[in-house]
Length: 234
Image (tube, helix red, strand yellow):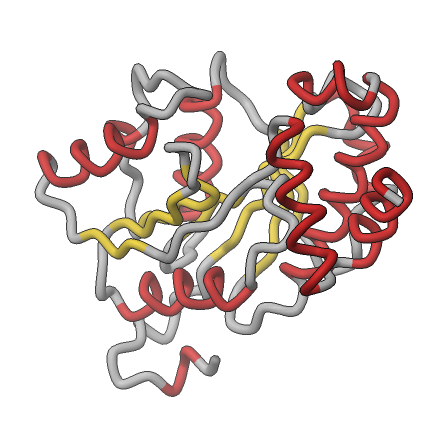
């Protein structure tokens, strides 16, 4: 993708869209709690580390974006820096809940001059990066106000905006199947132009993990996660 060559591209002073991976620092706080009964907390942390590092490597290959890691807890900045590849900007997540943290990260990146800001999860390890590139193209061109990547469980793996939209994140029942339909309804009620990406799945439960194993058994996948899953399932 060459965004500056687009006839509908943003002003010359605009920075390319920013893509922020929403990340927990492995080992600093519990992760993947719904997988603890199947894996143990320590093994779930190992798996999440694989997810995160593979996601960062994948995002680094997407052209036409500026890569960011939005991390929590803020006190673990040094541990996070040791994991992040060169070229990523690291920003602490701040806010009382996920909605506030998402809104603040996206608003910060837009205020910094990016023509669009995208937040993406770190636990959909086989997500095609073409989907991320599509989201960035849409925001750069101004073809939509909001971009959403739906998850099969009723949430989303990606959300991107061209301007701050706090209403999309307020009073949201996070970690429920209502997140996606409520987000889409709010976008409609606000009169926002919506671009919907193709659906994918994230890994939160043992059933999701088995689905990931089945997919990787036939299609392969990112190296760290693939090695972990092969070791787990044999």
